[in-house]
Image 1 (cartoon, helix red, strand yellow):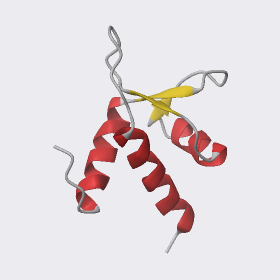
Image 2 (cartoon, rainbow, N blue to C red; image 1 turned 135 degrees about the vertical axis):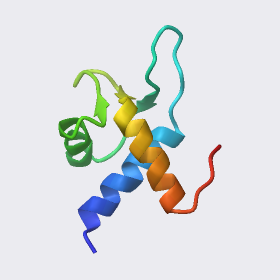
Image 3 (cartoon, rainbow, N blue to C red; image 1 turned 90 degrees about the horizontal axis):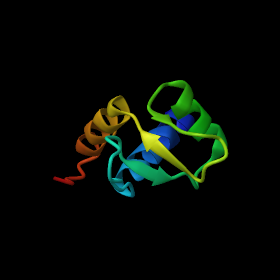
Image 4 (cartoon, rainbow, N blue to C red; image 1 turned 90 degrees about the vertical axis):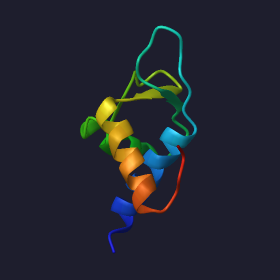
Length: 79
């Protein structure tokens, strides 16, 4: 089992589950209080984005899709 892969999956799911919508912005936003290495990997993969100075990130549409798919895979119903 790849622990880093599972940690990345769980981080993405938590980012999605704790996200909120902001007026005038299409992508959900979430606080980035998670492991910086994992957050950097998610940014590099194009799943999240945002300024390094900000305390929050945005979930890209591909990040939202993957988070929803992972939640289904883990048996978590959010809809």
